[in-house]
Amino acid sequence: MNYLYLLICPITLDAKYVGVSINPENRLTGHIHDAGAYNGMRVKGHPKAFEKSKWINNLTSKNKKPIIAIIGQYESRKKALIEERNIITKHYDKLTNSVKT
Image (cartoon, rainbow, N blue to C red; front, side, top):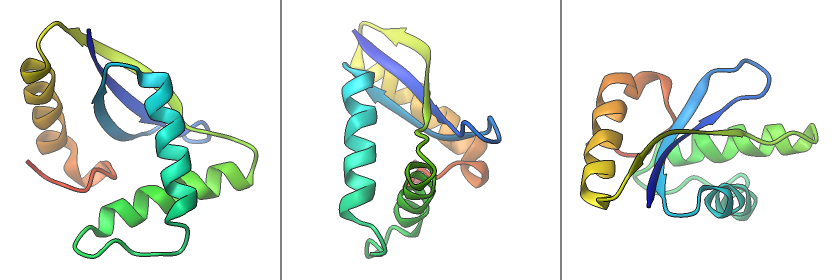
């Protein structure tokens, strides 16, 4: 099963990121790990990736982490990615996704 998920700020309750994963909890752990690995570093060509890392690092410095919310389940990864792209396109200015697809 492919899960479409949001990362939500536990402070403002704003959606900050949308993604697809077969294991959303593990992916959340990956986002947190990646944010720590890129702490203070800009990813060339991906300013929003830096924005996401900065946001997650700010949360973890306050002993908080993003809330993960499953918003869809898809047998087909392709269908999940299409829906992810639709959400990113519609809400790009509010999200920290790196790529507007």
